[in-house]
Length: 300
Image 1 (cartoon, helix red, strand yellow):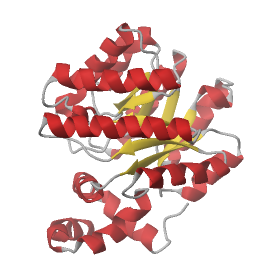
Image 2 (cartoon, helix red, strand yellow):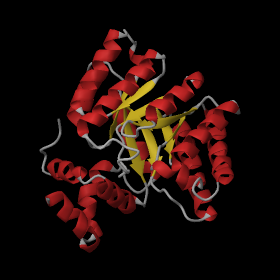
Image 3 (tube, helix red, strand yellow):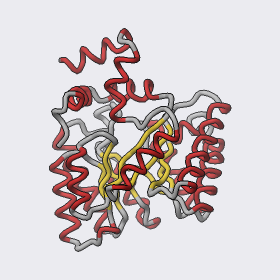
């Protein structure tokens, strides 16, 4: 109930207060902030994926600005020799406006990234864009771009079929639970249902030799991932764990000390308020975790 009260009163709370909730999970408003966070992660043998905040743009001019910002990230990655790659939200680059326009923008980014030896991850957004995002991936791979991957959300009932259909591409996949509030007709809602499907998806991916970013803070799923990579005798460079910035930092550090690759999702940008408010509304349980983190009660 406290979570719901906080969410409903968000429009009336000063942004400076909301920022107390958001700042732990966002590098900052500027690209230099994401660079600095990544450099700190590298000191403990961690890595990152940098994300420019912004999604669901409503004009081509705005989408072009977002494209240029992504290119600036690529330049910064190269200039600072960062152990990172770029994550992009297709709707921020125009996918929701026009498929071919979005494809053109994303192709330009991935082409520049390839020339610099940088990987690009297509983030998965809510269900109206699932098919289009996977179509983007297939088109780019068919054009010869091998420096691109995508995200699969375990709570989506279609995910097993999507992964199976794309197995011939041997894709690099970030596997997460999913955060958007989807209809129960297309998404699993039960906690254990989602966990079970996550495990099935991870099995499918690892059994077929895919490189997987096991993206979760759920200890049961982390343990399952550790068990599977051990059973398969995978080398540390053949998989990785992924977490959000500011979440379960002690567990992150423990995995790193054990020699596992851990990549942290590092968002930055001036759209921190929109990002934070959308995430909190879509996933009210996050409020409780954030409150605990502010008071130092949720670090493990």
